[in-house]
Image (cartoon, rainbow, N blue to C red; front, side, top):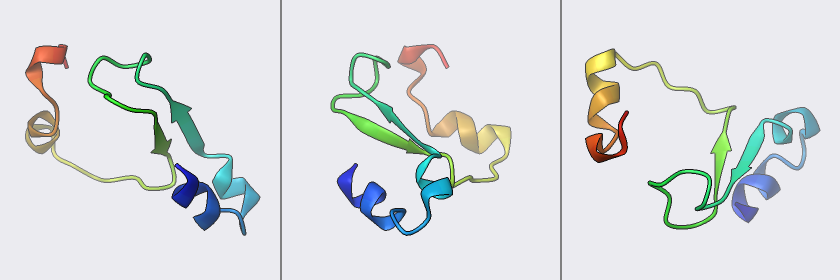
Length: 58
């Protein structure tokens, strides 16, 4: 998390797009994390489904 925050420190608008989540927010997280809304990916649905564990109901 600190690395992402330091990277975007020069651009406060970009830093505002970092969303902190802790391991209690999502069952699949095992540590505190950050969602970087600045780093979007274009994926077909089939590829998106491969990125998530079906045990978590996605």
